[in-house]
Length: 265
Image (cartoon, rainbow, N blue to C red; front, side):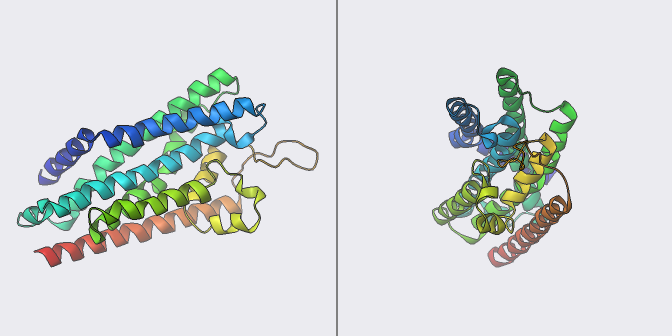
């Protein structure tokens, strides 16, 4: 019951902040709209901006905003001594972690739904279509590890840094996800740069999402025919990379929250 009460409090705090509507809801809509305009004025010859390719990338990038919101909320609670007062309660570290994590996850699921709806809208208007309902649910499921990783990073930074430093450091991760995540950059044409991107969780998440949406690669085959993303040994490797990062950051979140609890009690 105490965890549920804490979750409700955090969700209310988040919904009171206008930043959550600007970054977590408005920003994905703006990004999709902007790239659809770019696609139109490039003669619709930019596969990476087509909805089946773009939506997984926008979903991945939008989750980085969860990291920012998490860093802002938790570091603010820490600075205001709210957490220190809570530490005198019977709550354990897992109560704090779940109490923060679940509201951020709810917001992330709303982001996912917004992106999926945008995919159907722009897919219908362009005539290219999007994906069946089942594949949409599978896409949301596939994106969960990336969502959780961003939430965990935000919680870790907020635990380690102060109210000013934590949000600032998240900007590094936000920039990384945009530049090296392949959301709107054709990394497959960049040689060794793509190999670097494969070692981080951003690009693998987008790549797996594009397999589900049946998107096409930027580079066609030797005959000029489109090459579709497909699950292979590379896809399996990307899945293992994602799960590996999820495990590491999940464990670090538990470790740092436990350490913080012991130091402040």
